[in-house]
Image (cartoon, rainbow, N blue to C red; front, side, top):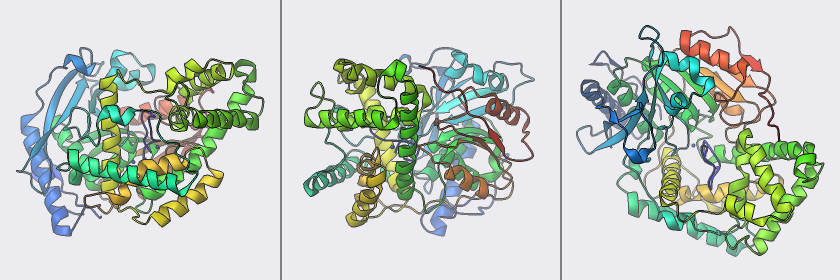
Length: 532
């Protein structure tokens, strides 16, 4: 599942070997201490290559310019590129450019503490809009903006950073797609064929990039960006899949971390990355879907969708059955409905909009739902971005870890889960099934854990998050010694740090501004429930 913009998947994980830590200190290359993918010598070569690339980037810096007009980033945001090796084992081989942007701190020079680098998740999400939190004057970030330059980037394969593709974007968004819930074995065979063809399309269109589309390589890119920014140590904010990127970075480059906030945490256990993590999501999505239905029922005076969760669910099943029989507007079938409605269990900010559209449909306004859930074939740029995001999501998750190749296992696991967790299970399965026939070598995930010199990390997590279930935050907390965990209790919105909750906001501010943490883990009351 994917995490940043609900399209056809669900989130951060995904619907996102012991590594070498070669340390670059003041331009000096230290001996590697741990390792990443493939054999030990190969992993050592990759980390040495990362140190070489970082040393070059520190000398080159970034040639900051006004951003290209079609990037949608207003002044005074500036844009540039950082050059990295495609394959860190061959630092003098093919190079690719990573797009970066920044806005300077809003405070004085004395208040400035360097750059805060951001990743929003995915895999496949662009961080380039992060500096807009300053230009749009987002109040939650005002204190942090005084002290830090806000820096975003497109990870390798994404957007303006050597983008990859698996299928023609217009074909990718065409609707209606097949109902993700299979009725027959023939339905399953058809979905398996689509997944295999998708994997083949990735190889045909982007095969030269696929072996190197891994989280460890993106973590190495992050270290090269750090060096290009002139930063001795990294300040990092990662959300959703960005938490796994941060966890891998902290494992590979512990001595390069200054401050790190991870928000809505992917479980970093090797046993979870990525197959089991996606199954765990299916369970969590069902729980958060029910939370939303309870809220809709409590606000029946506004939405008229029923006064109980069961009544709201009945209307959902009726809508789904209607769309399966005859897609709404000819384009919105069950797959498109799941894609649209899944934003409600993802984000509380979607509770009112999704319920409003649903309410209009039940009242007789079908067009409102068609407009909300159907693809816009005229939006070629948006469709290209969606296809690219899906390609990167698939490429990274498939390459990061070994996936089951037995269809019997996929079928058994998802059939079992679907019985009690029908909202997302099969949609998520088909989204990830290309990994079963992935055409390039799959790696062994990093053994995420603390190494010497890793400073305390701040972990923020809502208790009922659907995309990144709560157990992931607990797991990372145990692995990163000295970390602190802030739990937003009785809440489930994905991405906590951007919400208005003073209990969370003041602690994030304090940590990033002073390094200070509570002496024990903290439980916060939930942020305000959306009002119709």
